[in-house]
Length: 348
Image (cartoon, rainbow, N blue to C red; front, side, top):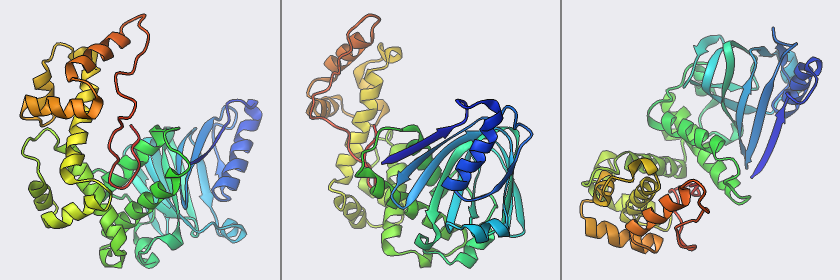
C-alpha cells in the first residue's frame, strides 16, 4: 500500500494556504479555495492508495472550496468522493441539493459537477474515499439524487463502510503492498452497495458485490453477538434470511468455517482481556463466559491450541511484561496469528 502525506505546519505561515491549494488541486481536483485563516492556516492529508480506490484521512482549518464549470473543463478525474465526518461541520451543495453535515455524517459528491463546500464551526476532520465513477455499477442518474445529501451511516451498509474507513485510517502501517487491491475491492463493493440501497437499485449490482457485502454484514453481526453462547450457523443464517448451506459456502470460499471464525474471534477477545491489568482479578471462566464460552474446559483447550499455553500462563506473562521496569515479552508462540476477516486481511 502506498501512502502519501502532506501537511502545512513546517512551512512559514504566509506560504501555508497557497501550498494547500496547490497540493489539493494536484491530488484531488482543481478548486477555488478561500479561508478567513490564511494567516494561520494548517492542514494535513494522508492519501492511502488501495488500488482503484483511495482513502483520505484529513483535517484542516475552516475554509470554503468550490468546483466550478471552468475548473471541471480544465480537469476532471471523474470520481465519486465520499466524506465521512468525524468532527466539525460542512455545508455542501451540488445539483441543486444542499445539506449541512456534522460528526458521524456521510455524503458523496461528483467531481464532474460543480459543488460548493463550506467548513465552519471549528476545524473539520474526517475520512474521504475516492472511487472512479466507472467502477460503480449503479445508474449515475439515480446517484444524482444523493449528491450532497446525508447518507445513513449509523446502521446497515453505511455503518459497515464508515467503520471500515475509520479502521483503515487508524491502522496506518498495518498493510503490505499485496493488501491494497484486495482492500480496494472491498471498499468499492461497499460503496456500490450503499449507493444502490439508497436509490433502491440493488438489482444493478453484480453477484460478487452482493456476496462481498453480505459477508461483511455477517462478520459484523457475529462480532456484535460474540457474548451470546447460542450464536450458531443457524441463528446467523436466520438473521440474514439465507440458508445455513449458503452461509457455509460464504466462509468456505475464504478458506475457513463459520464455527472456526466465531471461535477465533472469541479467543482474540479473551486474549485481549487477559492482558488488561484492570481485569487481573476476574476469574478466567468469567472472562471466557463474557465472550460466549459456556464451558471452561472447552475454552482452555481452544486457547492452548491457538496460543500454545494455558490462559493462566498467558495472563501471568502478559501482566508481568507490562509491569513498570519489566522487559517486554510477547506471550504468544511465533506461529500464532489472528484469523482473517471474510473479505480483508487481518489488521490486529
